[in-house]
Length: 226
Image (cartoon, rainbow, N blue to C red):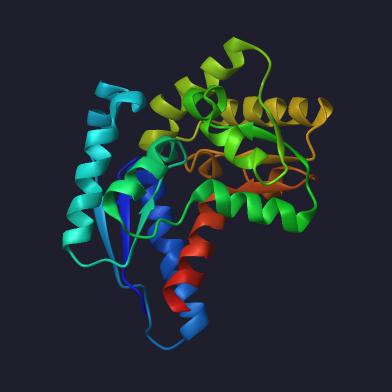
């Protein structure tokens, strides 16, 4: 089995989900007492927020370098927004990186989806690193039209979901936002922040919901066991 290096703590909430999903996936495939061989470098999310994501490259690089020294076979960034630096990190680290956007695009291609609504941090929604990567796979991305809506998503990710707080009113608002994207032509909703699946899931909708943490974890399991 390959050893997985996870850059987590961004946030600890979704990193716990990654650990659970990966180990469940490994055990389902291999049975018995088999579980993932992995190393987690858990960043202080407060440090990332203090710098802002756009200035967090050195923190992520240090985490990746530490994981490489521990002998991992690949690197996983347990956050969609961290993939802002994925290509640059991989170039410097010279280890395989399981890319969350590429894995999400593969799932969308299998489903025949050509237009996806994206919910995530402001950086993920407003910068082009995410949408450009999906466009390489023939997928058009739409995001909430109103700035106040994107600001609201950012605020609730940072102040609620990132610390494990689930607010029923926030859930209702997210459901409304997702439905609005579907009305605007989206064929599915990408939960493009690994904390959002703690708030909403496929159970809340009749149209396809793409849980990127689950998609990413499934790809990690495949890599580790093949």
